[in-house]
Length: 329
Length: 156
Image (tube, rainbow over all chains, first blue to last red; front, side):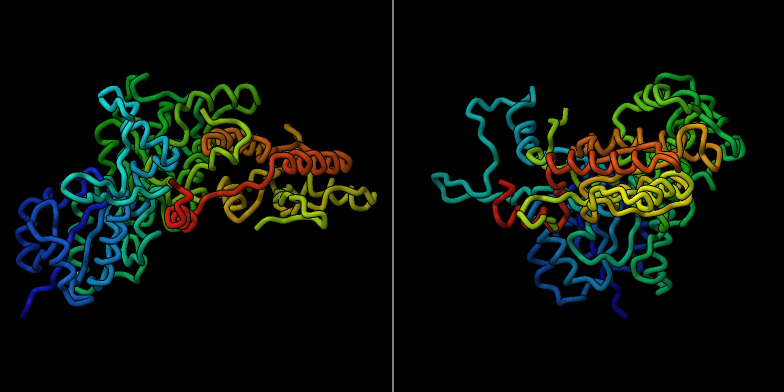
């Protein structure tokens, strides 16, 4: 019997999701006993032409990590969609947009300027920006187009399953792989992780009072964090109440708050809005000025509540500068 | 998506979330008193302003609202003791997000309007409509529109 074929691909990502696959350790060997990995740019020398040569639907599954920002990424995921029976959005960036998705706060031109003209480490006296086409003595050179916005994978192609996390936890990868091979996957569109909030598996849950109120918000470096007490009870913003479980609360185990990489549960439309709603309700202040002062303690509210989910949010992206009355600082 | 009046001028769409005990009753009073005010406001009646999930506000913007108005009982008067305080905290934090996303502050308004203040409903609705008329439509970018901009070269 021929083994099912699987592929891995990366788009706008950091490589951490690839690392998560490698982190399966010896389980990887068990996995390759069961499947043939026929495409994995980070590890194996197969090219785009090899994928193009496949029959449509020839791959049993493809795991795609990273958000989509360039025309090359878009073409590759569309190609892989045709060649694969199942597409799994792998990791926070593919599922929600991830950290690269925060680029949706800025205009395309500003990003290119920052990267190629203004960065202190850049030496570019002529202010040259990357161009899609460029003629040199040897002929014409091309680069992929840089899109206006960062998109999640399912804003570009049809996605069958979602495996969130930054990176996805090893045990969830393993259970997704075995469900795929055993034909025991849930209905299409499912997120392959528990559908409850992180607090339900947090080792500090017992110390979170039902009537918890926060006097002031503090950042982790501003406080000696008690390793046994609920972080919210210590004024540290933890997105556990609004974030999906499944990571075994590893960040909290490291005495750091949840930053929301697993995304929301299935009942939530907009992760950041739900998270800010939960945090605002905990604030122990009823006076207008006091509320303004306390909320001002939250440095970078969008980066706090939408750290991984801006492209998947209801607003998707910042408003165009010409549409605004006040320039945004 | 743009709404215009007979003269081709932009008419803003405002989604209003009014609590049933105070602001909605005030809007009722304004109607009974035959007060005329801007028809740009679409009222959604909720039991409490504390029921306004920030997701409602963002969903309204996403679906084409140019402004969102939230009306609740005055501080201390909430039928459920402190629902309006929760609203105040949530709106303040939500505003930090919408501001960062480039949505002007006038587009999200929170007002305390008691059951007897029918005239305040009229005044707030008129004022907000006028402000948004001057501000113009809120055009959000969608993933689809983002692609369109790339194809047409508008993004470059």
